[in-house]
Image 1 (cartoon, rainbow, N blue to C red):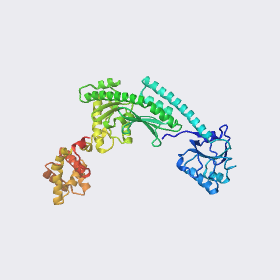
Image 2: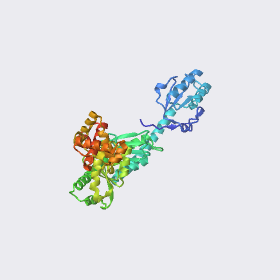
Image 3: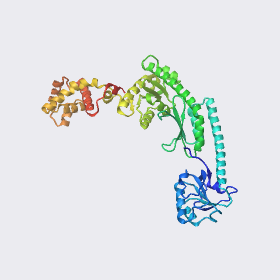
Image 4: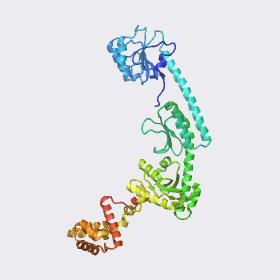
Length: 477
């Protein structure tokens, strides 16, 4: 519920014709009084909503205990002030009531005899009407300004920025899942937020985050409601336009990657030179709305299950992905003429990013670990079955150390003497073990090509022991 404004205590005390006198409690002239409530009950809390000026002639305030109880009741109900009518029950404000109000910091003023309590409700009602009319005028003027901007076909982020500037704080348009599509102004990480639904398809919400010095919440929300429909139409047109643009660039990039179009066609499409350096970054297609918000000025291309974004700095894309917990793969920074390679690298890196749970750069692709991560288990099984399992079985039967010796030998680059020194073995002992490896597996570790196969086999075995078994579909994500 938006906060309702009211009359300040200072304005009430200065109101002509009331002749009020503050006799106890804090001299808090900025305290806001929302409404007035008249009562002679000693316990009126159930009839109070908070923010009221409570008015009474004090027929129940006949003792110190009753005065204390009454003030406590008002404080528990968040009343803002107490007015005591003089002349009907009390000729002056009771000392016990003054002391209780001082003790609990509740402003207390005397109402002269003959001043009707209705005068307070009329004053507050009149102030509320004036305030709402002024708010309506402000809302109407702001709505007209925004509609004029739309009529001039200004970009939606610019319109949103202007609206955020007028209201104070920050504005966001979010989709039906709450994912930001665009952000303007300063949006705090926590605090109060007010939102209105954006009708139509795609569904979404316009969310306002008030900042210091922001507009009155009631007036601001009225403005947002007035603008919800035209903003929804403007947003729908913008989203449709972005989708067309992303699909067009995606089809063009696909042709370039497949070798069916020249890279200069992409440069011509983007209006840049073919020697302009760019890097492709690939993101999950499900994150497209968030990517539009995070990288609003970058060229985006729909690419199957991914959205490829062309960026000037791959490091910036990686930093955004890390900060927002999104899978991302980045290709090498290349001229547009070599963009196909960067796109292929970015898509491969995205698949690896999904498997590893962090952004992946192209430099990480040319490693044995990255290669194994992108291979299905079926492709690695022969390396395990033919090269590692027979050696493991022999070690279990005989207590030999063929697998550890083989690992050390490959790790030293295939050098007998340095490996033997590390293992505290005689070189001839290590040569004998490598010979047994060759006899059992059918591959000679002294041969360079065989050592590559053993390297893959050992890495696959390590992964099999430390990670859950993955399917081909898992590896393709």
